[in-house]
Length: 202
Length: 202
Ligand SMILES: [Zn+2]
Ligand SMILES: [Zn+2]
Image (cartoon, rainbow over the protein chains, first blue to last red):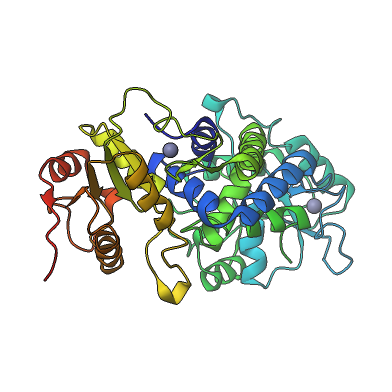
C-alpha cells in the first residue's frame, strides 16, 4: 500500500532532479501538497516555459530564450577577448567574480569520446570561425582543471595554431580536480587576472 | 549580469522546495535545461495534476485524489482499530513497516496555538464522530514523540474519555524528539506491537 497514483507519480517525477533520492522526492512532493500549492503551480509553469522556450545563444551557445544572450547583445563588452568555458554556470561564476569584460564561448560540455562528445558537439567550428571573423585578439581557455577540461583546452589550442590570436589558460589557483562553478569569487578573479600565455608544446 | 529571465524565474521557483538553497536551485534548473527537458516537462505536468486534483480522503483525511483513499476503501482492513498519525508520510512509514492492518486518521499536523492550529484544523470532531459511529474498539495514538505530538495525543485522549474505546499510545523505542517518518521499519513495527494502554491522569 502506498500513496495515491498522482502523488506516487509526482514523487517519481522529482527523481529527475540531481541529488534527489526517494526520501527527498517524497518530502518535496508532500511539502508542496500539504503546504504550498501555489509554489507547486508556479514551479510547474516555470518548468514548462523554460523547457519549451530556452534554447542557445547563436553567438556564445549559452542557454537563453532569445537569439543573443544578454552578454552577447550588450554594447559594453569588449569584443576582442573571448573566454571559453564548459557550462552556463561557469559564465555566472566568472560574472559574479567580476573583473572580466569580454565575451564568452560556452562549450556546453567537454571532449568525451566515450559519451560521443567530439569537437562538433562542442561547436568548435563555430568558435574557430568566430575567432577568424571577429578579429578576436585573445582567447582565454577557462575549461575546468580536470583531465577532460585540460584535454579540451589542449585540443582547442591546437586547432587555433597559426591564427593571429593569443591564447591563454586561466591561472592556477583553482584547486586541481575542482569545478569552476564552486570556486569562490576572489580565487576566480585572481586566477583570471593571473592567466598565462598558452605555450605550444614542441 | 545573470541568467536570462526564464532561467532566473525557474531557479527562483525551485526555492519553494524544502532544503533547496540558491546553489541547489541553480544546479537543478541547469541540469534539466542542459540534459533532461523530457524530465522537466514530466515534472511540470505531474506538479500541475497533483496540485489541482489531490484533496483529502473523506474518511481519514490523508492526501489522495479520490473520495476515499486506497486504505479506507480496501475490504481487507480491520475497521475496529484506528491509528492516529500526524502526516501522510507517517501512514506510509507504518505501512512499510508492516504489521498493522487497521485504518488511519491523519491529523495533517499537530496542535499549535501559535500557528492557529486547533482541534478544528485537525478534524478532531470528525475523529470523535467516527469513533462513536463506526464502533471503533481501539484508537492508537501514533503522533510524533515531540512536545507538540505528546500534547496532541493527550488532548485527543481527554476528548475520548467516557467513550467505549480503548486508547493506546505507540510504544517507546522511537527516539524522543525524533520524527516518525524517519524511523526504520523494524523499530516502528516493534513500537506498534508494544503499544501500551493509555493511562488517564488523575
Ligand atoms: Zn551569447
Ligand atoms: Zn482514507
